[in-house]
Amino acid sequence: MKLSRKEFLKLSFAGGAGLFLPFGVSGCGGLTAGNNSAQGSAGALLKSAARLPEPFTIPLPIPPVLEPVHTDASAEYYEITQKVGRTEILPGLKTEVWGYDGIFPGPTIESRRGRQSVIRHRNELPVPTVVHLHGGKTPPEHDGYPTDVVMPVGSREAGHGNHGEHAELNVIGEGTFDYKYPLDQAAASLWYHDHRMDFTGPQVYKGLAGFHLIRDDEEEALGLPAGERDVPLMICDRAFTEDGSFDYPSLDPSLKGEPGVEGEYMSGVLGDCILVNGAPWPVLEVTNTLYRFRLLNASNARRYRLALDPPPREGASFVQIGSDGGLLAKPVNHNKIEIAQAERFDVIIDFSIYPVGTEVTLINELGVGSTAKVMRFVVAREGTEESRISPKLADLRPLSRSEATVEREFRFVRGGAKMDGMTLWTVNGEPFDPDRIDANPQLGAVELWKIRGLNLEHPIHIHLASFQVLTSGGGNGDAGPYNQGWKDTVSLASGGEAELLIKFDGYRGKYVFHCHNLEHEDMMMMANFEVV
Image 1 (cartoon, helix red, strand yellow):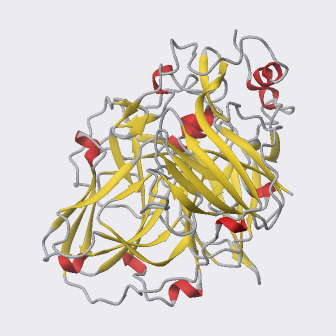
Image 2 (spheres, helix red, strand yellow; image 1 turned 45 degrees about the horizontal axis):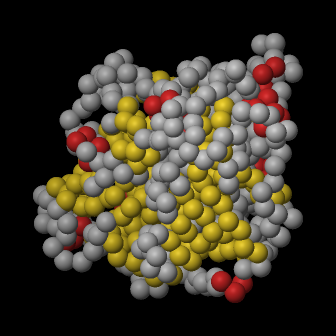
Image 3 (spheres, one colour; image 1 turned 90 degrees about the horizontal axis):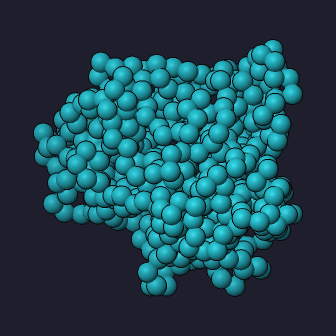
């Protein structure tokens, strides 16, 4: 029996027989059916039919910075059109993208701390869209709640005045909507992406993602690499059909009807072509100086373990200066960086250690074959050093366990509910229901959340509220090397646990938290909290 999400939820929460299954049972021949894992990531590999280029032959593109259409005393105003574009990603072939302004990645937005950004999004795509500013401290009506959709331009004229199959959605815009971001938060590398309920995975895969950078005086006073030496790197993987189109295993490729992916890819979609800023295995010429790289894993399901080949003769490969929520208290050295979906690492690489002419490859130690390479740097010439790494970066007050007023536990697991013959990804055994609230934190409170990922790896993202990781992983009683500073996404290994101290400041209202493996999110691994 085919059930819509609304029908499924109505029956399941009324105790409908046959919808809830004991742990370990699946309509797919057992819980592990479809629980694929490859190359250190939850998911199955989708191989390209198109011929992929030789690595390190295409220059690294830098997304354009969007200019405001006007400003006033307190805000900048921008306009973005979500539309179909065609671009040459693979040499000699054109790829259709669904892009912000028709490009992939979308234009970068640069804002000042404390100045509002008002961004008018116009939807010229054939489906509803939702925009989420990932990492933004944003009022609920502008956060990109999954059912708060902007309908396509002309949808009423096309005979969808009551929106038909979209009746359960909250239509916030007929063609356009102004998202308002106060941005009363520290300088940080944020990103914006589509967040439409049930269809986030394919719509981000088609190109709906871009950087949003916040700058402030505190960061700029540090003398960090700037200008051409401050480089955003959006890393993701894709597969391509023979004609160069993005290949994604949607049950309904139009994205207008049935959500979800083919059963083999229920755990996640992994592509065999690594893109950086939309280019396959690109190359960047650098001077023998310090460079700042804003690393973003924008993949649907792939995780990376990044390293330099060759590593520097002395010192660390990467000096981390920032995390999801902005600057760290002090720099942290890494020779490798493990980055899960939606995480950001703000790092500095010192190319002065390498002789001019050296080729330095950014590799992925979790990859195999084509996915073991990411991009290449060529130390092409000498340069004048104009920046530095300060031993102190920001004043960050660590939260303590004693500050937590409430403790909660959440399990992210495949099991507990079934729809259309598939066992769903759930939070505490429950599929996502827009009407169910799973936590009611008080505004200004600190809570301790204990979270656990079962079956496979899960990157967990919490909207609105930044957190500090108290403990994570293998029982050492600390946060681990990659969870420093303020975070909005934490990586859970299969069977992994973490304790988060979450500060619920900003705004009252309803928000979501979810797995950022986008195939898991679309198959209901998401829940609500409401700040009261």
